[in-house]
Structure formats: structure tokens, C-alpha cells
Length: 314
Image 1 (cartoon, rainbow, N blue to C red):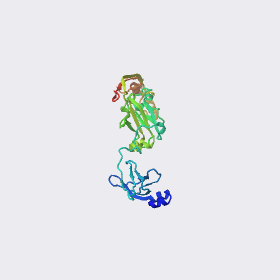
Image 2: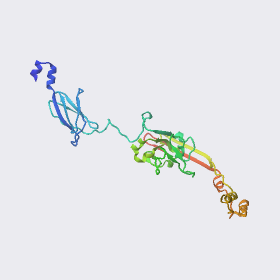
Image 3: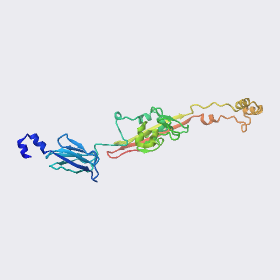
Image 4: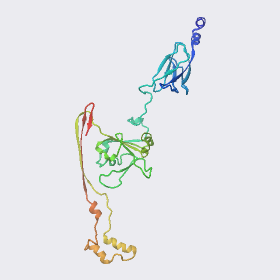
């Protein structure tokens, strides 16, 4: 080899020194690593290992081979004329190449899913008895309806319409924990995110079939204690009550409808003049029960603050 280098050109000499190197790349448990990269250091020459973790590459006497695999520590080995080089890679402490997360925060410009956000300031713009009531009319495509008119009762929320005859409610996640949105006071809410599309199911499973509503509550901030009080007083009344007929009017129309004198003129007169209220009553119970006004008051008091390491909000 040295005589050839003296007689011929240097390039022929370097070519004569190249040899074919083979070997296997495995992990700490001797399992073959498929697709591991083997590169001649300082060049663009490289190959990847096959299904058995084996490779074949050409390299010169003084060169080194770099072995790398995602999630494992790189290793560089000098060839030194060896034709067989087996390498065992150990797992890395940190995986910088690939990061997979279930959920977290992301810039809106990077967002591809259908997500609507409502801030705490928007929720508190109107006095609402519950967080679900505060969402009414604030998120496009989200239907908020009352099941009944009971005071303090929560409202029904449909994010993706009625997709099932049984369960149509979305999944509520409050500070990362499943819960009931109506158990959270609107004043305690920092923001609400509504995940509308099917990508939410990749994180939360089949329970997210009807959408997901993420509730983030307020946290304390570093600094002196802040005391905040919010109070409101309001009146509540029925929007509209049905106008019902009097008892004597009902009796007269009933006789006409069936074509017989079920109610006699004497009975109808008693309904009209109220002379026998125990047997011939004429009361407007809906007006008596729901016709007035109800006084509503709400008081919220919070204390928040904290140091560099500990924050609180009560």
C-alpha cells in the first residue's frame, strides 16, 4: 500500500485505504435499532440500519463513524482499519427531538382546531346566576338553553348540536379535573375555552364526543394582598304568563263543546259570584304564585396575593 502511494497519485492512495465496514446497532437490551443513522464524520456519506439493525458503509483508515438514533445518546467510533464495528446505544436522559403533549397552551396563530375562547371579563359583563348562564350568546355554535325556570338551576349546553338521544352534554374540565361548570362561580373564572371539533377526542376519548369545555379559574399573583368585593341587587319576574279563562267561562264553553248541560246555570252563577269558593272556586293560581317580583342579591369577596414561590386566592 505504501509503495502504491509513492508511485501513484494521492487520491488513489486514499482510495486504496478505504475498507467496507459492517456491524449491528442495538440498544442496552441487545434489541436491534431499526433506522439508526450511521454517518462518516466530516462527510455526507451515511446509511441507516435495516430491520435487523445491520449496516454496511465504506470508510477510510483514519475516519470515524457517528451512530445516532432518536431518543438515544450519540456515539462516535474510530474505524482504525476494522471491518466489523458493533455499537450499543444507551437511552438519552432528555428527548429533545420529539415532544408529544396531551393538552396545554398554544399560540392562537398555531392553532388548527375549532376552539372558541371567552375571557373572565366578558363573563362578568352581565350579572349571571351561573357559569352556564354567563355563556349564553357568547360562543358561536354553542346552544345554551334552560331546562326549567327554577332559581339557581344550571342550563343545558350543546356544543355540537344533538348528536345522541341519550347524552348530549359536553365534557367539562375545570383546571384539568372533570367537574360540573355550574359548581364554579362566574367571578372565579379566568377564561373558558370551548373545543368544538373531533380532535378533542384524541385527548379526552369518547367522552369528548359532544365537545369539551375547559374552565380555567383565577390564580393569585405575586404582590400585596388584594381585596375585591363585587355586589349586585336585581329583580326577577316571569317574562310572560298564560292568560287563562275564568271558571264560569270555562264551564260555558265546555257545555257548548260537548253539546250538553254538564254545568247548570246555577253552578255557573256560583262560579261567577264566588258565593261558594270551596266548591266553585275561581282562582288565578299562576298569577298568585309567579306574578310578582323576586329580589335577587349577589355578594362576592376575594382575597389574593402571594410571594415569589406561593400564590393564593380565597
